[in-house]
Image (cartoon, rainbow over all chains, first blue to last red):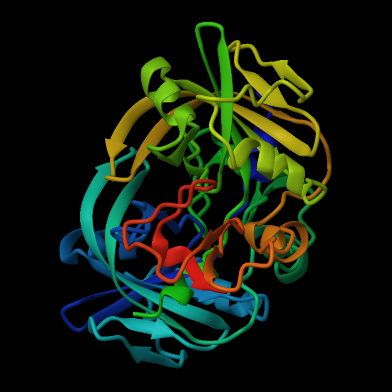
Length: 200
Length: 200
């Protein structure tokens, strides 16, 4: 099994937002797919470690804002590398509300999709949400970013802070300092497992 | 609802192959997604009108070959615009067999993934297969093709054959000649619905 072959799959990158009571939150996901056109339905796999996951599970609704090639690394850091349980990710962000009451992001995004959960399938580390598209709106003509483009052109090199021994998360660049990476280690930034780390 | 917003979602393009008895077959899909890394599992949504769909449903196994930017329009025509129920799509194709006995494609592909179905969810027009990755192999360093790249750089302009009135499938270029497109029309080439056609 060559795990690198899995990296050949193509993905976009999206800001997944939800609202529960007065709390707005969001995270970065890469797995939004239109699975049927009649009815218009999408799937998204969301890591259970994301607070947004729990909010969607409880409220049954979300928005997807489609990130473009113009998106900045700071945007990924804001939405992807910290938890909405501790931080208000929308504090410094310009956002609007869609008809479903949930925020969407205009800056660095070319469209948003509003969706209502039809079913939630437990996949262990993730939940796969199947959802009806209730609204969709194009925002700009900018090119959608691919995960590959993000890796090559947007993600900045990891800061090793002079560490001589350690492991770097190939997904987001987080550096774990130490001689050995625990097998059950999970990246505190992007929630990917030890198998996505490589030795510095 | 702005249906064009749905086109902002990013996809790759893949040859999905299956084997049933002595019959090899395959089709083009755009919805292969790794949904969990531990265990290594993918989902793929397959249109029920594809013969490959029925073969996978009966045999519970398939391969995914990842198409690259070097792929040619003829490849999409071979795998996507005709049915394996009538034609042997592998007749003029160079293919090898993976360990699971199912063919994979080396030409114009940069990796293949072998998978075993864990569950099949009925989505109406499509079935969503959740599958364990049983093997994966990188084949080349060529860039994976995106659906957007295919639309802009690979797909050739539709041949209207001088037709003055008609509708063209925006997905594959099939031309329907006539004054009105039936609402329940399904593209005979790529199986997309009437909503994906536009007036010539």
